[in-house]
Each structure stands twice: as C-alpha cells, then as structure tokens.
Amino acid sequence: MKISSRVKIGVLFVFIAVTFYVFVPSQSVAEYKPEIKGINWTAMDGYTRVVIDLTADAEFSYHRIKNPDRIYIDLNRSVLPPNVKKTLSVGDRIIERIRVSHFTVNIVRVVIDIKKAKKYEVYKLSDPSRVVIDVYDTGQGAANLNTGPKESRAVKAV
Image 1: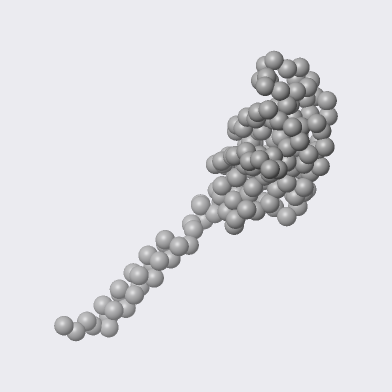
Image 2: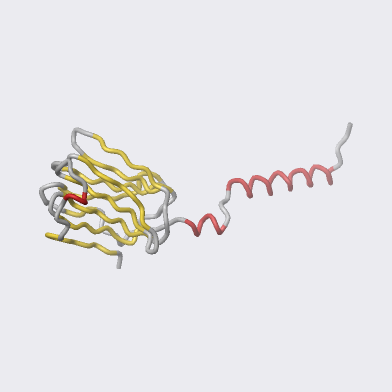
C-alpha cells in the first residue's frame, strides 16, 4: 500500500503540532511561576520567624536534616530573581544563617542553618503570598511565649 505525499505531510504536521503542544509550556503556565520578592526574619523570645515573600502562592515541601542541623524549603515552579540576596546572616541563638538558590531549574531552595532548635512549624499565608517558618528553641508553641520582637531584619528585591 502506497501512502501519498500529501498524507505523509499531514501526519508530519500533526506530529509536530502535538510535540510542540506537549513540550513547550503555554503562556499561562509560564506566568504562574511565583518569584521570591525577599526573605526577612524576626527574633522573638523563644523562637525566630523567617518569612519568604512571594509574588504568588507556591507549592512547597520542607524537611529537617541533621549534621549539620538545617531546615530546607523547596518552592516548586518558582523563580529566584538575581537581585535577591542569596545569603542572610542571622546570628541569633537559634539560626546561624539563611541561604537561597535554585536547586533545579524549577525549584528554589531556602536553607535555614540551625544553631539550636527543638521544633519548627512551616505554613503559608496569602494576600500577600508568603511562606512562614517558625523555629523554636524550646518545646513550647508560640502561644506560650512572649511574642514581642527582639530583632528583625529584612532583605527585599530592589
């Protein structure tokens, strides 16, 4: 059975169109990538709060690993603009420093290097979009602590 050149061209066209549709992201997908606007931290009695400011809500995962002790947050399908500072020295009694970089092309990783921490909590807030990490040096939750800030620093994108 002989296939006409017209059919061959049509099949090739459909193959290229489907390949383009599957492998090239649409404009709406590309626009969704939240950007890191900045990272700030505040030292309180009993805990330190780290806030990651975003341009839009982002899906994320987080883990704590030892030796050295650290917490990392992976922000999926996110972008780290070049004007955001990559290392923040905290130097309080709980957190040594905060580092941020692209872990992969589509994942921004924020690493919190820990000096001393009993527990931590990670949650997101919207309007404006942000991820909040509370790192405690005691076994108590925030409700049992004096929550007045002792020291606060912010680093924002320019």
